[in-house]
Length: 487
Ligand SMILES: *Cc1c(COP(=O)(O)O)cnc(C)c1O
Image 1 (tube, rainbow, N blue to C red):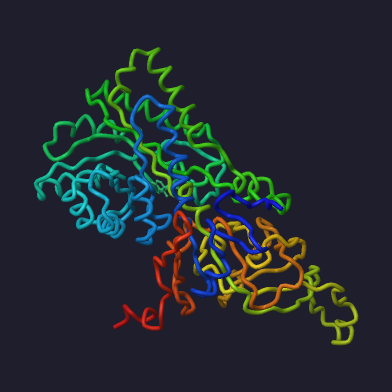
Image 2: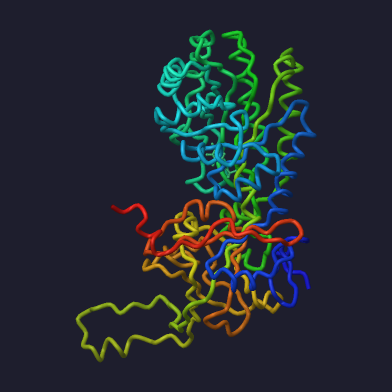
């Protein structure tokens, strides 16, 4: 029987067990322990090919730069490079990793709000494709650095348009109230003043409207705004830009299995279930801009343009799962909202007015907490949960799920009482300690944000390749790793 979460040739059930690109997930958990991240290289490739389809709907080259911050374990970066994708980095550390794994300078773009001298120097020395500049101050630093290094720096200015999307407020990045980018007027002035700088190649403009955007039209809006800026730059300074960067943020449908879909408030549901083809959003964006460019006699500006996109989530999120074991179980009364209020009654009076709940919740405590899935706590993110051992059994029994950390917030529901997540998860009946479960769509912003909080070892990562070969691309941490940097 097909499950809501099935994806042909990737996430399937055989002998009632979850398989990832043909490999038995339970066997992997036995070999490597849990928690364990499992990534599928064929799925990563599929996602990259899907994004590359955008090249077919525009009349200019497309440069696809994977946003490394979503997941930057070396084995995953290698898989992404092998799939012929370029890369976007957000720090000197990520730049170093990208170079080390074999990306060349012309494959790298560099974002960030607080770049340091050494990071800029490294970027200039390696002649990267573009440093995406966040302020006029930073632009002056880059100019000095480039002069000192003796190489011209390729720069692209990050603009901050007012584009609001329906994503989580913490994931909005294109608002004047956000911390990113510069005002368009500042950028125009920079092009006027610095176009002849011997140290700078002012080659592009950039914008990123935020992550998990539910609205495909936001890309058309973004591109229109960028093209209007490109036009103004051309008119005011005579510079024809070499590239426009539309950012990332293409959504992943976290509610593809819709069994619990109705338990979300409207806004959350719309965001988690967001689903559109990136190439359709880009097609719309391109055709709108092209039409208006032709009508206004500015089609020449599009002639030697390269369009950049820098998605992270849509490349790795659904390609990775997290296997976790139930380590503890308990029963707890259902919270019926009653509280013992001290009105000065006697103990007997208090007890006589307090009605114990008739029903209880089954609690399961796993080894995967917010130390490895931070968004679960900070953004109340939803990762669909199934039994890896009984994957095709009916998932119709309610459980309260929680992780191993000593924080009340380390739970798989909204402990702040705002009901942004379902109160219970559905699993087969009678789940006991020892059963291996799988959290789906965990490939992005998980291990990349993980910490050793509570003295927990960071988990290993297995990469499943085409044909079912597996490679351990990150080992489980050991005691020594917990103190490796302590002096
Ligand atoms: C995070 C980020 C991205 C990637 O966003 P996704 O939602 O993972 O696609 C792209 N560009 C910038 C500037 C970012 O900060």
